[in-house]
Image (tube, rainbow, N blue to C red; front, side):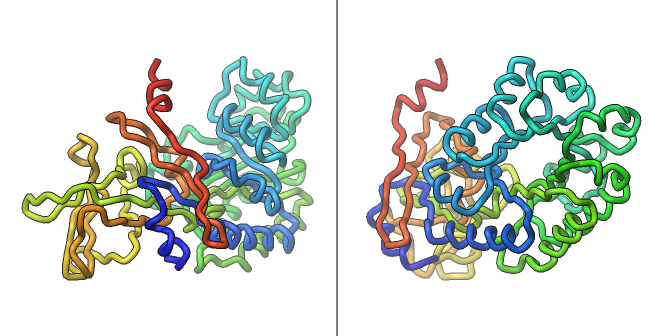
Length: 380
């Protein structure tokens, strides 16, 4: 953990999501380098990170934002001020006119919806999500190319309606999740094999998200070669829309030990919750990194870290420490900027964490504090 957050722990009211401004900038500089060296365009996928108070900073480095629906599209238009792209598995009729005004690119998921709504797309660049039928990951829940997937049009389906090609400016695929450039290389080979005859007819191709570009072991040289070779071969503009890579490792969840109970082992009850504040811990599942901790029994004192919700399974994981925990101790979970704030909830009436920024000079800025009204107004 950087020294700045270590020094700031005592100044942060808990629970709190804390964005590390310096780490965010580091990630953005990596992404800007890819843009500048290849000529591709890179967009922020808001579904992973939509802390719009830092959109002006992100906009200095990236070309725009992507949305999964009309609310994210509006947020991107209002706060980011770059290109706005939207993809949804399906659109409602009353959404299309608004998206036509708000967005620059509108991507459909089916030939049926393309035919139904194309006449209303008067100012957007129209695209179609395709399915290259090439799985590169093991987790089925994150695999858009799994058998019977609802995401994207297969080559057989697209070519059964050749008139659809006349309505399209671009094709979009999104098959990766937390993966490297080698997985993209495999996907591109399948994409070119199945759709190669029509790629050069397009203005742009969107390589989607899931590219872990800012991870230390990511092969940036391979990524850049793939982008440049593709653009040179087909004369199209390539887009990438990473979400996690933007804020990877750039956020923390600071929490406090409220109580310690014992039932076969020591169990620390925190004011943060897996179910409410970091849902991916239970959904994926995964064990989030925790500063100054080890695996169970690796260090002298092992605790199960839990929450004050009534869900029996609201358990973050088992961790060990050099010293015994005490009530009032601060713990700091790492890599909590992505898929945390955007997915949190108020189950049990659980208060939402503060949102703050740890600036590069060491100062801490409280950006948002939630209260009872935020809980109440969601329900009636």
